[in-house]
Length: 525
Image (cartoon, rainbow, N blue to C red):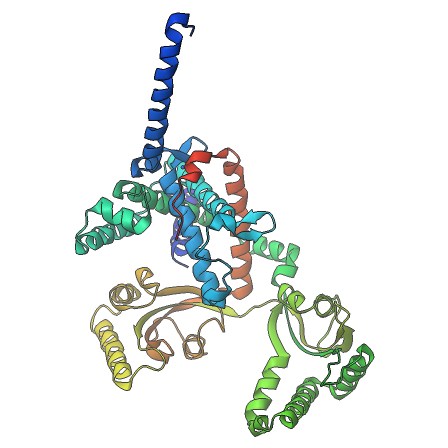
């Protein structure tokens, strides 16, 4: 094989590897004598047609036949549009409820979505409709481009489709319903098995093609360095301490604090912060003063543990590996100061905050740097025994983890054989990928898991069992990976290149909504 062919094959192999990795790490004049009788007949016929039309549009068949959206040359039925509309609502409601509680979601389930405001000019119905159309557009564009490119769904993706459809068939059987009735009951009016199968296959094809396109480019180190230099504000980090001093409005029961008094407090704090340790100590003293003031108001606050308080205060004033965007969300003036050209470790000052309501004392522990620490690749098999579980449950989970590790040792004892055991036994969400986590950065995982994979003595092929709040993990260390900054830069480059590709092809697909098909949608509650 020539050197040229060898290089081409190598690039193809690397692209396939990247794609597999990304897959893992979501359409008539009349005669006067006859005119009166004919008009009467027409009126009767019109009434029949309207009545029949109203009946038809209310049927499941109508929802599958009448188009709600046209994307390029692809017509999306009202039933399919409704499926994505309901999904958009469900995702939004579930997410908001999980973060803030159902009472703060902002949607009254006793009223139509079309009568409730999402924003000044948009109802919730409009918002979820727009979300549905946007998602449908991406899926249709990618699936159509995949077909045009001759791209076929990878075997593992097809296996996932088959497994999902088989599960639906089993669910229908267990409920003693026909497939179509089960699908309509579960996924909405107008849905049947054939349509659901079409939706699933289109989604999986679109996602597989997206993964393919994201994984296509190959970047060398020079390109990564160049992109980093051009977009340094996205990736550079600092380690910094800061303490806020704000003015306080007076109330009937408490004295206020003027902006001048806040500045004086900040300057007094700065005088104590001669070095990082001095800053931490000053922060601890300030916290104790505040605790004492609270204790004076409520004696129940006076029994706090000093050592626990010291740890907490020290940790809350130190912010490591902090990007400019994160620091800007705290205060723009602090961010601009920390990332200013020529800044060195030990720099400190008092800064007025961006809202002019107080001051920050800032101390730069480590000036702008690039996160050079390695990332790692690791596989694991989770046997659940969550925090608070009974001891016998924990013991059983631990014994099972130990047994799985012994099975691996008694077998081929390779990464591949470990992956097969993960697919069979792991209760984590990445079991289908053989329990693989790639490009994991230090601090990403829970403490005991993180400590094991970043142990300085760790080497490829190492195994072990780690207990976390989720249960017991059978571990397999795969390899060291790229420095964290490179992982971040490569991900950003892939995203940018993919977006350029998508925007280029999406422009060719005109999107048009159809009033009747949209109105036929089934509401989510």
